[in-house]
Image (tube, rainbow, N blue to C red; front, side, top):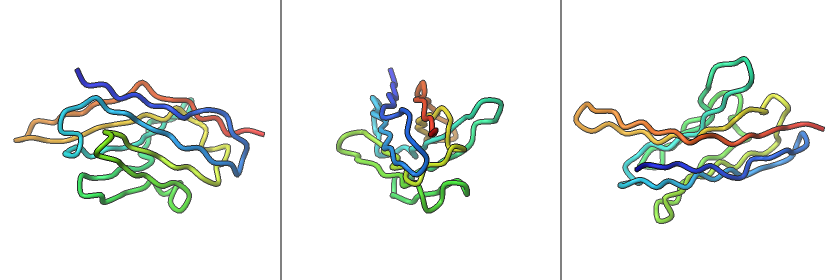
Length: 119
């Protein structure tokens, strides 16, 4: 059974940093595009960052230059380094694993970790 377990959330002051981790119990982890999404109260879930099996990264406009996504295929783990945090970064952050095989989509989500940016 696939499990994605996020950790590293918490409360931080504006301008601070946090690193989120997502440990994946998933076969062929290296073949999945791994992503971080977030959802703030009253808002839709949005892309934060994702990284392909080849290591190509993509970021949401609001986090470019502040957040960095990386992966360690040997540890089946994806990371999100967040810097220069702003109150508007407050949200539940979700880890996602996605791949397609012969037209079939395999799309898995973690339960999320809360990030609160507040003074």
